[in-house]
Structures are given as structure tokens and as C-alpha cells.
Length: 125
Image (cartoon, rainbow, N blue to C red; front, side, top):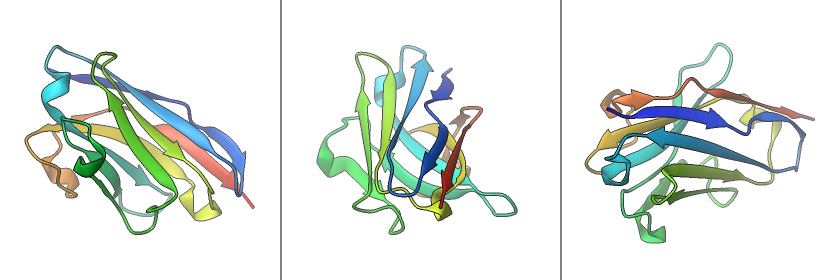
């Protein structure tokens, strides 16, 4: 069993940066692929980025909308995954969710077994 708790959301001006954290409980965290998803008001939850259990830069995947601006990383010793968000845009405004799954990275949220409660990110223009 893995429990996830996000933090680090807030209000930021366009062009600014935020760093989200997702703290996981459970001894098997290091074996899980971890992802970030987001859901804007009136829209479906969408994939943002994911990182494989090994955490190397070659084992990450990004949605085109955030590529080059967002960076996912993980520290298995701290049971934490991070989302560094730079050059934020108003369209990045959403509730951001951390999610975990066994196995390989996928972009389909249906395959993620564990979810956090979400953290609000608001980008003002």
C-alpha cells in the first residue's frame, strides 16, 4: 500500500516557477513508476509527466504542453517525487495530482493505482 501527499501548490504570476512535492509512504515506493496529472475546472484530468522507478533522466516522459518547462525527479531515499514547473502559463492552472503504479510508465491515468489528494496551482496573467 502506498499513500501519497502533495504539497507546494499556490498562486504565481505568469512566467514564474513552482516546485511541487509528493511524499509517499510505504516501503515499495522505489519500485513504483510515479506520475503527475492535472485537472482544470470543467476539464478532464490529463497526463503531465511521469518517471520510472529508476529515476534516471532517460526514464521520464512529458506531455507536449509542458515539455521544456516542467521537470520531474524523484528521491527514493526520501520517498519523494518532485515537479519543478518553470515559465508557468495561465493555462497551467489546475489541481495537480501525484499518482503511482507498478511497472512501466504509462500516460493513461486508469493504470495508476495510488493517488494523492491534489494541490492547487493558479497562474495569474
